[in-house]
Image (cartoon, rainbow, N blue to C red; front, side):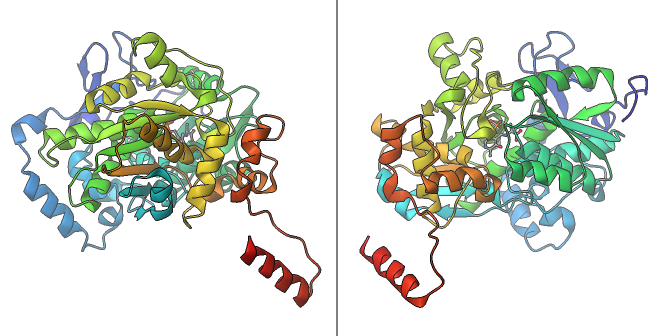
Length: 459
Ligand code: F0G
């Protein structure tokens, strides 16, 4: 680990030679440089990346779309990345070989016929970000942010995480020959995610605090040691995550869906998708904006409360508790960015219970797709938005599934064994019995297996 006295590389060393600037989301200050904490030097708020030359250069939307179509024929590493595929709308590199890529992005857009029947919304799709190289949407942001960390000369990268960011960061650091430091809440993340960080060689610290405590400590660390932070308050992360929306619209032949629904934790992803939608609209790539809605777990509902109790003007933090551990976050860093994109696109913000999450996860699994619990809040939230009349049956809806089913096998096993909601919500749990498929232990005889098959056929 570098000592605090080692001089810190300049996080924005390359920024001056490229196509973007940093802009403070509160005071609007524009700068070519960003500090280690990625906060405005004047008011301390978050930075975003902005592209001043976009106005003058007036991209031709048709030319961009046809360049992207053409790129699909290429076999070069940068073109095979579903993120760098859209590099015209990202911070530029001097050389394509600089990108640290695992061929992220390129994720499928699935129809969800069974969930469509359940919700009464026939045109229902899932954009499955869980099919990224490390199994979550984080890879799309990480390829860009890790690349800029290496360009800025950093040897160490670090993040606080509920699991997926750390898995992704560790993989991209390893690919880029950098060392990585992971801070995770002790006992509150799934073993699958933790094991990924270990396998990719990260120095992994399980801190006796929650995610919010880990993130706070990281903020202090980056001011003391030459460590590049790869949490989503790093605006390069959000630039990479924007490409989820570019890719989605390309898959829909640039016809925007009526609604996009995304889970909300630290609120980086919703902010990134919203930024992408606004940019696509401004550049004439899409004719109108989809409504972007954010769904949170009831036990980690800081954004819901921020909007309901403070009109979106100040953050209402919560003590977060949910079995959807990926979004077990009470003090979301990007709340202001999320409020902005919700308002700009006319989206909604809802919360769902633990039982609703478990049910939705099983219903997505029954489609043969599967996702992790945090992703399932989207389907649970859609049911509420339909009931409220915010989503109408004739409208088209895309759910963003953020993580792979294999990310949290304990949740899935406990659900199917009937243990998940024990002692919390017994009546809600009993109502989900028809969705449960617990493993059956049998004598190893043909009769026993045939009897089981017959019983299953009747049920
Ligand atoms: N879904 C999954 C699977 C996640 O891992 C996360 C966040 C979210 C949704 C929420 O996204 O934070 O951008 O609003 N996981 C982070 C992590 C916090 O450390 O892996 P968000």
